[in-house]
Image 1 (cartoon, one colour):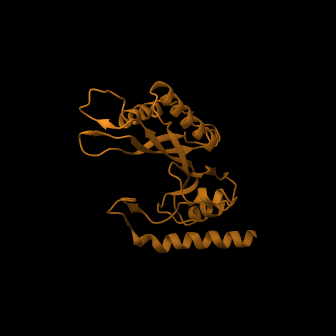
Image 2 (tube, one colour; image 1 turned 120 degrees about the vertical axis):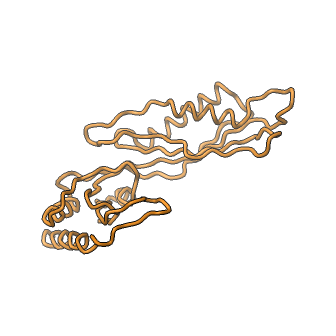
Image 3 (cartoon, helix red, strand yellow; image 1 turned 45 degrees about the vertical axis):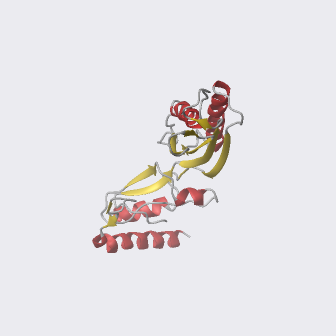
Length: 221
């Protein structure tokens, strides 16, 4: 049971992830040259359009969130007069049981193949997988979710089970076959911001809920 912040939700699942770094190539040259080529940045921009337009499945009955693809970084070139021979992208795909890591990689490779066919370059576009975590979701009657939800309700808190869009340590544990909750804790504001903060007055109440849940699990064992 991982105590991420949030007093009104017990996170019992989360989308997984598949991440890759992509290197887009093209001939380098001078921006004022009479020799016109499609530069690496322009080729990368075309790839971004292909990725943004890719069709992903919706949510399914067993998992409440759809997959999601995001281009999160793009770097290439410097100055004004030189067109670069390389542009690098980072792509983050949030995966689900219906659209897994294999599906994500297949989609990316299809878009890259389309780019290289439509706008050829001397060197093919390179895809480097960086990380993958599986999606996870505990069933309504699966521990430790039941113990924590029950303990929170007994403490007079109105809580709900939630499947999170962002990945969390629960995904990492799921890869090892370890069921986990990954969210019930203090009220918060500004999560991951420079002004992130938690309200400590509820700490005794949150502690009591976890203590009650652990004792329930010990009795069940």
